[in-house]
Image (tube, rainbow, N blue to C red; front, side):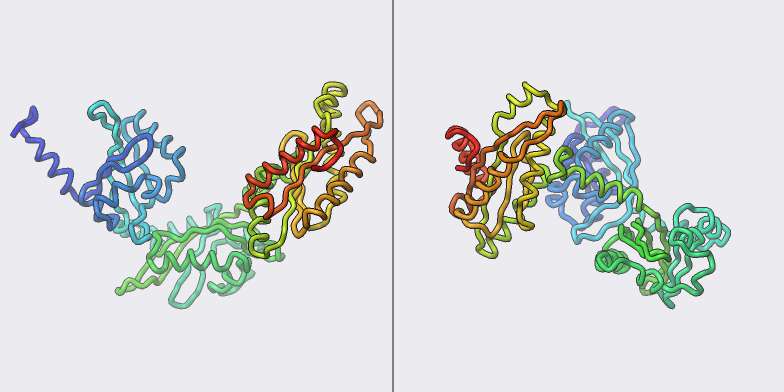
Length: 426
């Protein structure tokens, strides 16, 4: 058997890799796919080697969120030669456990391979228990942390809350005497209750290594704050049943409202205030599912401003935008409450009319086209300008069963209307 320069055969290193107590995973630095794992790595996940190599860092590590994040981590490993990452690994049964991951990059036969040595931190509770039981540290944490800290005794349901918790919720530091876990649970928004309790039960039952959830909590004045709440079991009895749980709560209302605003803006066309194409697709899918369930008809119309390029070239883009706004406003003001109009792109708009037959749809389109032609808009130069539009109409189910088919038919109809002289429906 061949030996390396120090006299140890390759078989020794192969046996060492497979029999050391720490889990070892070999991964592709680009895709995060797991190429191999040692015996400890497979045992830690409760998987066979074949099952492990079908995984990736994205499915294994709950704290690596997406390929982009993995590639950032991989780049750091390749750049520095080593990287330490704290996270949670997911077992085959769906439970997770805390880990420390130390990764290096090696080059073998012309390719880079990430080698991660993983240590299970579940058993490292002695130091944590010391911190939790040390009254001086506990007082410091509870009074100086910017988060609201809580300490729940499961034996009697008593709940210790830090001064910051009371401040966040709008209470004086001694306003609630002898709080219990019901003090907290009764303030959870009803729409969030099930999700919060499922997360809590998942940790108490051992399915997850920590409790973590975002939800709304009612304050002293009756408003709701968005809360990022997380915690873990700090003490168990001799049978492993949880006795005590600690955690901290952070007010994330401002960031959640900002995120909601960004989400809404991502769905709305800024010029017209209507839904944009992306949001329209989602809406279209819901309409189709509803019609499939109820067997109701659905009319889909594609509407397009006539000679819009000529208008832009003659009057400029500012008046082009005014024309689009006027067009959208005119259409919207003459629709039923159940109809939905959104901007498809440029000067094109898509209109969904549920519960309408083809004949009724043609009548609606003729009325809308007439309203557009009869109402001029005021240009930036103070001139009254008349515009017209053309429309194509397609119906579900006779003209198609999918968004693609219906939009294509409506688009074809719209071009027929233009070829036939514009200012009409086809």
